[in-house]
Length: 419
Ligand code: FES
Ligand SMILES: [Fe+2]
Image (cartoon, rainbow, N blue to C red; front, side):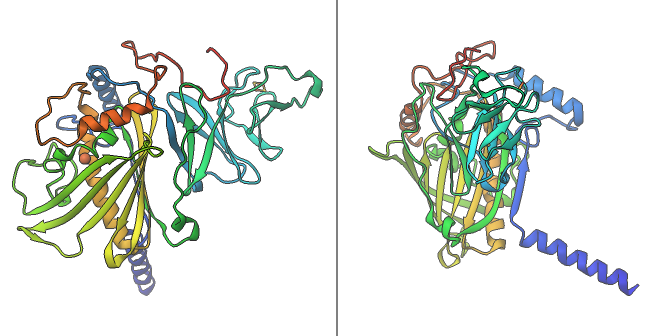
């Protein structure tokens, strides 16, 4: 009896610890939210079929090119141990990410030029920074992509063309990023380093991850769409994220108040756009102490946002928002927080961010892109944001054809293959 009680108390304490102290890890896959399936909601295979049907019926509109030029997150540092190999889906292709014995990171196209095996499935890291194909054991350098050894043949017999495309990659702020430019241009800007992360002053405080079915530009454009803050994001997060279940036009007793602006930066930082935002909560019109947050959100290129927060006496911190196009209209979005704040505060903060973001997902998943919107006077600087974002496309940026194919396959800098 006493033993059962001790175990019960222990489990309760452990549950409380997980709930209050352990960093948030909220992962929502395609179909978890953003769709409206009606009632009762279909399950399993039928739900998957419904999603496929919705994809077919969806009107995408006259969308811009689907893959902009820039840096994109493909993993977090802790996802990849030395000698580990990870499959990556990036811009509609299978790529292979691996870490060498001495810690460097490399990304290559997944298919072996010999007989086409996939490096991600059974490939091994060897000779420090090389990967060995699982089929016949050919070895390729992660640095240059060249075949360095064929274990069953002499080194002078390595075919001239035995090279696999390698992608530029950097590891910064405990994330791994890949560079893409449709014209084969090497990186033209760098991702700012956050010193407080390297020094350990700001520690990991949680992550959220969402699969979002929309064009990449819809997500950053939200930062310049100031009018939607005063409609979609007003109702207290106590009412959740499902916009099909909330009364958006009612006057809520718990209300989010927003005040924002958005401006692009000048040369040499024209790839950066800044949103300045103030937010607090009111209950029956009275401001709730401790809810005032001032934020500078720097959109750095098409796929990275640094949101630097000042939580007053609770300290400072950063939330990274990264958007990675896995396919033409399929984005993987992560929010990752490093901060001085207490674990509990960070958890509540990240959850409320996630709920607000999830409301946008309901809109993005179902909307069409409107090339020439009907602006009214009090819309935010959406047109300005679109002109700014246009710098990440060039004439060769891949577009989505009507039949679902692409006008061009995204390539790394040393990719000469036509397939
Ligand atoms: S297919 Fe890769 S070594 Fe043969
Ligand atoms: Fe939004």
